[in-house]
Image (tube, rainbow, N blue to C red; front, side, top):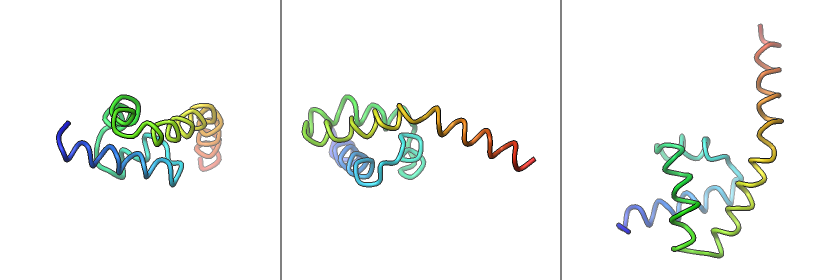
Length: 82
């Protein structure tokens, strides 16, 4: 793995763990695609830091479980603004 990828994997993972941001929010912040962020934290991170990978996985699972609530709130807000 190249150095810049290694650094990005750790930066992205630490950010997700600290802020509990979603993959989409993190991708926008780091200027990469959602696919890249997802691959970094699910495939590359376990090889780099298994302990951090487990912590980030918990955040991702929480965000996944909560996404239907966020989507409903966003739709509600959209129609309230009209």
